[in-house]
Image (cartoon, rainbow, N blue to C red; front, side):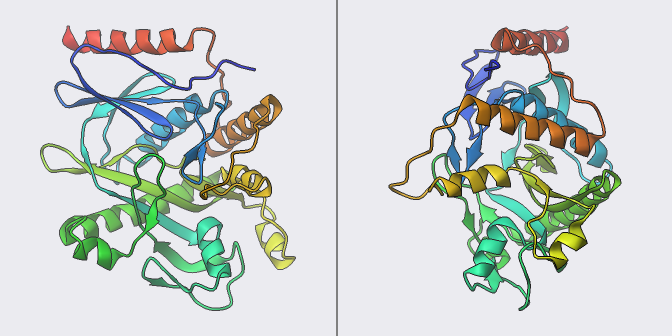
Amino acid sequence: MTNTLIQTQFKFPGQKNHYKGKVREVYFLENDLLVMIATDRLSAFDVILPKGIPYKGQILNQIATKMMQDTADIVPNWLKATPDPNVAIGKSCEPFKVEMVIRGYLAGHAAREYKAGNRILCGVALPEGLRENDKLPEPIITPATKAEQGDHDVDISRENIIQKGIVSEEDYLQLEKYTYALFQRGSEIAASRGLILVDTKYEFGKTKSGEIVLIDEIHTPDSSRYFYADGYEERQKNNQKQKQLSKEFVREWLIENNFQGKPGQNLPEMSDSFCELVSTRYIELYEKITGEKFRKEPVENLTQRIEKNILQYLSSKKN
């Protein structure tokens, strides 16, 4: 199988700390600089799966970079440069401890909650009579508290976030405003490519100067769900599954193999052919959402390539 990037252990000049997330590895450097490396790790149900997906890190990083550039006029972001296909470098921020999840359709987690009889999701009331994948009357924000690695993100209401002091009311109102604006722009971009942006999540941080900025990734298959617009209405009318581009098919495969991240459940075996299939699906989404042909970067010396490109960038900033 194609060489994949599972983890990194770099030591950069001025390095202060190294954090390993579910998918990304983050290096904190002096001068409030942050290096984020998108690995080929795959997570679902808040669990990191045992094998990497070829080119996944490159795909995520390049989609996120393009989407950051395409939304910078409406929401400021942390990004400064992408010196390598798997790498983003930007301003170090203090992250808000909530993920701003926004949904335009009843799908995924929201659909599972609705099917279980719940009509209140994160303090937001949902109307009766909805079917899975129906469009909601208007987009809703259903925040989640950010989990430590190995734990599950937890649904939380706007009221609880403010009441518990997780985010101040003033900052939260700004996060809401940015979230709606980003979802509107993301939906427009998706529509221009024949896709529907079903739901997504955004993460924000605050710079040393107190500016709230968009951080992490945006509109990638790891953070978003897309339907094909063509045939959507027909499929809904006939109670058929929607054709989608997202990580949901991985979750469905895990559910079929009796795994949802619950205690006592064992991860199913991931064959090389399954990993290649997932890679193909990620490449398909890249090409659909960006409108560009995906170019596979050489991966024979993947770790060395990444290190070299980061060091060259850091060196150029010193001169």
